[in-house]
Length: 78
Image (cartoon, rainbow, N blue to C red; front, side, top):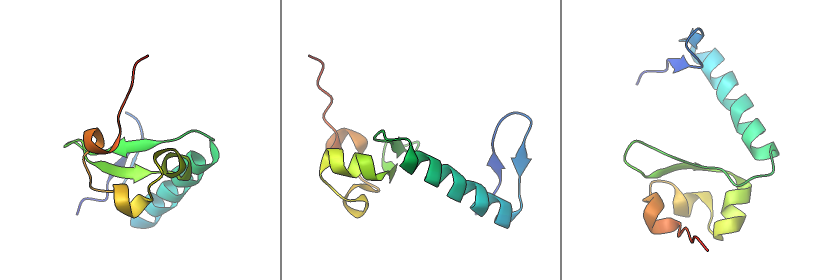
């Protein structure tokens, strides 16, 4: 598994401890922003939801992770 993390065009890190630290920082930031956040992989499957998203969708992370976004979230344009 490649643990390289590209933060922007000028910063990359391949140190496993640094990557874990940055992942924890990003996760803490996303949990604290107060918005529902859902990320998907290249196939459109959910790979991360924060607590606000769990509350909004009334499902927990285990129920959502790996499932197709389109099957789990219905977007309504009123």
